[in-house]
Length: 320
Image (cartoon, rainbow, N blue to C red; front, side, top):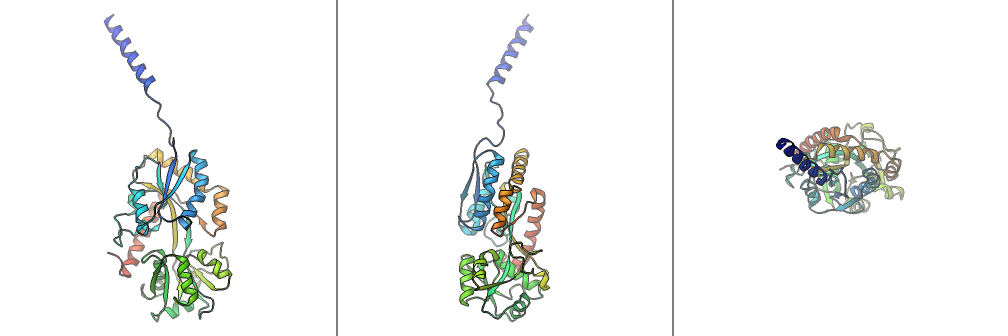
């Protein structure tokens, strides 16, 4: 009898515990935040907000896009890296994560994050003034060998700086052959180009399209492996005999250490959202190339990009 009473009492206790314990909620059970390290209305912000519409449908929860700017991207990227790895803080990591540490800006590397996937790419280009002396990439490179040409774009040591450095190095010159004058963005750099203040712009051709349509600049080449659907008549550098490409990329990432089931859910939802007709068309209409490579391939790519960036930045004397 004693044994029966003990067993019965223990059973009641266990049952009460099961009844009292709340069921484990399935992720996500509340809104998700995506931190964008760059300003509202810029390229990264535009891509993420387009993606977020489809991502919200797939996740079944509101997606809040928050801009955390400052420090050449360090503020926002740090906020992502230092977030809680629970799937409720995600981020829009950009190529800067591969060289923040190299240039001494922050102790941030691709390993600071769980890399979900790249979402889009925008190639660098070679844009010159319409009334200038250059009619081809070959002519630009030949003239640049004198060491007297200049280029501009946002960020010393950033993607557009590496673009012109890599172009010249691949053409047999030194990485620093063209003097790079950093600006506050593509728009002021392009105005400098039109006014004769610089020789070329090696940033995004998308930023130069309006001026090209107005006949003020010429886009001579793009630094991609294939011609861009947005600029079908513009040759790649490889077509001009220079084996070099550089595309700026935009991704979905998270603080390092996401639970595997959460990471899988995020990647699955992101892939479905990215593949939707609405997202694909919205990106393409803006001249942005959609790309979804997934966590594994993205991680390999980021490591390779880090190595290439470090080599170029060392050649430029910017690496710390």
